[in-house]
Image (cartoon, rainbow, N blue to C red):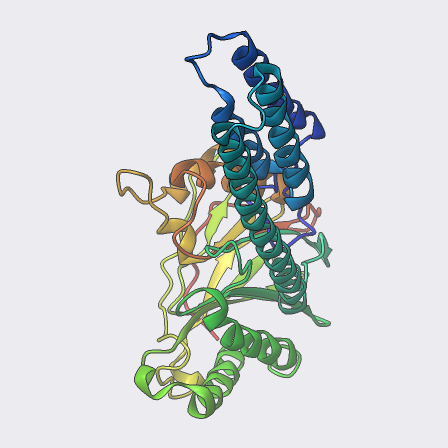
Length: 384
């Protein structure tokens, strides 16, 4: 279930079987027993009773599977008694074979149940780690309305290398969205480092270039200590940094190899600013002087849509990429929560319910205010 308060959104929900399904194997036992006793002597249906415990193991644990197996063995004994051949070698072999097969099915059901519990524990821990790493963004920060959604490519892990965070100061709001190379648990450490570095540096660096340089230093130190020798020079992270003042109707952006956001305004085409991107973090930024900042008009009612490449690189069955800018145009006037709800549902429909890479989205809307400026979306000259 999607919620703006939950950073991770599952594309599925666990299936919980109803106990009414037990009527299926019980009914099979009754039908097979009745059919066998009513059939001629040359037609033997008793061995089909093994279907009952096999079916039960699909949706129940070892205990109920064992009960159904014992019931099936008792039904086989009843068939032998009814035919007057209970102690015959043929009937005894069938009963023993049914008991042995039922025991094997019970063992398989027990192994499956144990693995299911282990997987549930892993997912529980992963979800807790996800919430520690990606704190849910509040619905309101200053003059901004926010919503976020995270979809991990590895369902068992539920966490990956995509990241986002927001921080407030006296002037406005800082936002970061990023993507660590790789996916799943292998990228979690670097994502955690970046989030911690941003939350600390966002309060000490007034300008975005200095903030980007500070993050670059943190990533460089981390890679020097923990980068595997066989991946030297191949670990990096792309980030997009935003500085949104409370009073000025603009948004300042710095990209370190990350896709530019989309600006959505009801009744106007979706705008994608042409950012001058710096190299990704971890590949050698030389300093804040070489990092550019773009200033984008961001008036009341406008929405900025931030995303990672897992969204625009998601493919359908024919290999076509997800056309994000084309699809979001129809939802430009929606609230951030509604916008991300539509995008998530449409994205999963495009990919058939499974993503090939982690995907994260943030929708940021400027709340209406009488002194905010309005006008067509255009990119102002690059400044610091």
